[in-house]
Image 1 (cartoon, rainbow over the protein chains, first blue to last red):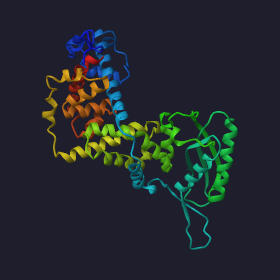
Image 2: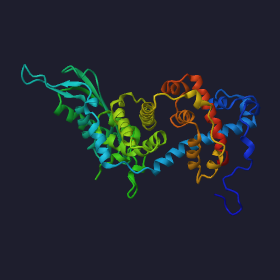
Image 3: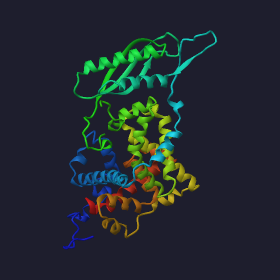
Image 4: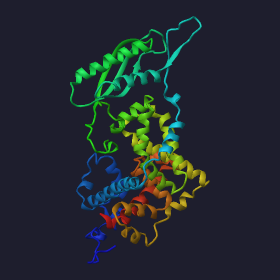
Length: 216
Length: 184
């Protein structure tokens, strides 16, 4: 892998510069002390490192290999095939919905002997669906604050949302609040004191023709 | 059509929705991070037919433990850590005991620098340099520099004394710097 001059373009000017990695070569510091110093954000400042060209050289080398290690894994990831669809279905079939279903929330019994419940997970799902239906909104998280396991115990619904830029944020948040309050009142027996809507994120602007997976 | 696609959402929002029980959000996370997890598992276990299983187990464990993820934005590195643990379990199952003390003093072969120098890119060079490291050094290096484990966490995961981990990392560091010297 040499070009016509016999010199690889990436070869360093002075390959011997870092042959010396012992404390005697690094103004008394070991390479591990330097790595720890880097990990600590170079705080508190140590002039015996900061002012030593040999140490600065070694720190740069540590940073280089560190970054290269991360990048090489990312490069290897790009060489991997996308996840196989039937494999994804297999994973989803193996996860347990119960593990995310939360507390049992009682409903008002229609007869003495009934103990109807709805899971907290089902209520969160209802809130999520309701919030998602408001234009330009996706629900990030939601939770029920209060003792939902007691019938008629007052609770607060907290809905965190991500919102598209454009329409008025307060007006959109109000639409979410009203819709969620209505859906919860209609489909559960929770005694809702308040619905708090927290706008925690802006949604990325959808760009036609781009791979949505590329937007993080 | 006003509906936003879940695939456009960032990891934190998806992890939050997953934690609330949204399987579709979790599916986006699976789709997004599987290639990286597979690459990591391949690097750790080699190209075996265990890769699909170990990544699947990682996502199943992650789903069950989403509540324990404190910083939702760090879901990627959290998944990597779960995976790393699963890979270690597999390695342990393959071999009853590693002779760590022997591995610790091992060094790359004499012609290793040449092989690294002949790489076609810096990324490929790292790949080759890592392959030249003795296994225990490579494992510690990846846990420290890719997964950002602390020394004591590596020691706990590998069931080694912290002093041994420090020694392994010290050698790994010097070997990696020397092997990568041609690629600054």
